[in-house]
Amino acid sequence: MKTVVKKYGYLDDRDLCEISLINDNGMQVKILNYGATLEKIEIPTSKGLENIIMSLTSPEDYSKGRNYLGGTIGRVAGRIKKGQWKHGNQITQFPINEGENSMHGGEGIDTRPWTFQPKYNDSYASVEFEIFDYDGANGYPGNMKIKATYRLDNDNNLNYHITAMTDKTTLFNPTNHTYFRLDGDQHDVTDLNLKVNADYYIPVDENTMPVKGAKKVDGTPFDFRKSKHLNEVINSDVNEIKIRNGLDHPFILNGNQPAAVLTSNRSNRKLIMSTDAPAVVIYSGNSFNHTGIAKNLGQHDGITLEAQVAPQNGCKLDPLVLLPGEKFSRRVNWKVVY
Image 1 (cartoon, rainbow, N blue to C red):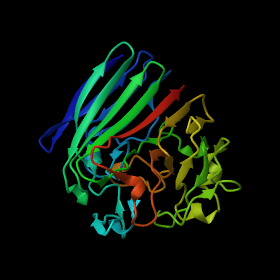
Image 2: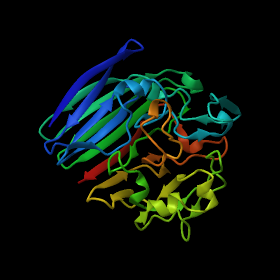
Image 3: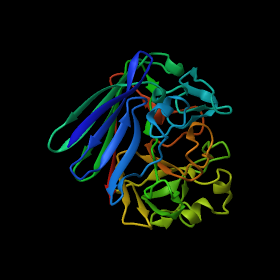
C-alpha cells in the first residue's frame, strides 16, 4: 500500500493536488483535493492500467467548468424546487442556477479546494479531506465542518465516508457523483447490466423534479431487482425515460446489501456498491455530447449511483435537516472485481 501526492495547480490561495492511493494488487485510485473529487479508478490489465470511471483529460480541467464528475456534491445534492426551504414560518431562499430551481448546492463544495491528509499502512491507503463552509454560503445557514475520506484496501474496496456538523439548523444531503463505465473509454454503459435492491422508484418530470410519491417498480423498466441490461432501459420507449434521454431517477433502497451491482458483459469486471444511504439516484450521463471541457465524453459514457436521501417535491425539506450538535455520517463502499 502507498500514497503519492502530486501538485498540479494553485487556486484560492491553496495548492491543487492529485492524491494517488495504490494497493498491493496494482489497483490505483486518483483523487483531487479540488472538490474532494474521485478522478480515476485504474485497474491493472495486460495492456497496463485502465480507468473504469468517466474522467476529464487532465486534473487542470476540473476547475475550468463544472460538470460534477466524481465530485463531492453539497450542501444538498439534486434540485430544490424554486430554491426554497420552508421551516416553521420561515422561508430560506437558495440561489437559482437551473431553470427555476436550485441545483447541487449552488456554487457548492465541489467547486473549492479542500485541505487533506494522506495516510497508509499495511492494510489500507487513505486520504481525509476537510473543508469549512461558512454560515450563509450559497444561502445555507450554519457554519459547517465537512470531512470526506477515501480508503482503498487490498480486497479492492474503495470506501467513501463523509461526516459533518453544523452550529445552526441547516440542510445537508451530499453525495459522490462518480460516473462508472467498467469497460474503459471505448465503450458506453448500454452494454452493462445493473442490479439495484429497490422496490420503489420516484417518477420525475422533464426538469428532474419528483412527481408525487414513490411508485412500485413492479412491471416497469425501473425494476432492477434482478440484473437487467441497461440498453433496454436507457433506450426504452417509456415516456418517463424518454423525457430525460435515459435514466435520471431516484430509487428507494430496501436495505438489502449490496445496494447495487454493475456488471460488464465483455469481461469479468464488476462494481459492487454498499451504502447506509436510504436512496440512490441513477443517472446515465444523458447530457454529455463531446463539447466544452468534457469534449472527450459522450452521452451514456457512464452511470452514477448517487447515495443520498431521495430528492423532495416541495419546500418542506425535513428529511434533509441537520441540527446543531448532530453528527452527519454517510458511507459508501465500492468493491471492484476484475
